[in-house]
Image (tube, rainbow, N blue to C red):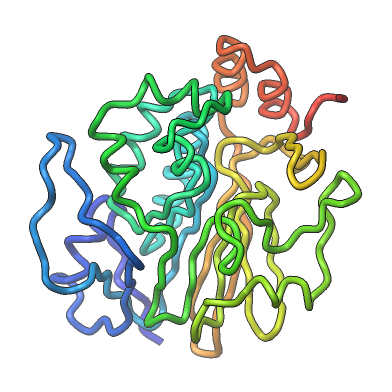
Length: 303
């Protein structure tokens, strides 16, 4: 069976409409605005919805929760390029974290890939004063903030077979789709609870989500759900809905591979080593010792 034509990541958008004439599926940005370029001007106008045409054997890299960790992001992008994947999808929480928000933003803007806004993008634009957002905001340019403001909350991909969100389709960017944290630690929730949170995905048979930083592949209600884990921050503590801790268990930068085969969708979780110490020292310089601990270990220090 003929494999997809593989193209460099930065050329995906241009080649999608010109170099591969037999591609038949598409990506539809739900509620997307035209992003600003780095010089602040809007991109060219189009009467049609933004589309990325893909063929029947597309291999998609799914990234989420970079949180400004450019060191980790560079390692993941190098791994993606070496794997000759066709497309990247970015599930949000892009720059808020005690690392290098500006360089991380530049890298993600430069991908020109389907990208959605997470809760931290909303908080950045609304003036939220959480420690990660407060650290990132003054380091970002107006062009970065314009790009963030242009991002949609959800995406429909591959002829609407794939639905992408940050938190959950029904509950928004702060709801955990797969996890029950009432014990203070994440466990896989009941199938009926997960299915209730899938409302609004239309005809999709695959849902991509992030937010929890916990890599998972789950089937619920006939839907394949993939959380790639976090590129840049393997652990955190939160007090909502109750105090709980999230830990990936290893410091590696995470992403997922989603591949459309003749018999359906295949998914794979990937963990990429990188210079953990460099990123941990950035967090320490920002006064975030607990984040530095998680970068080195994949776990959070005792409370």
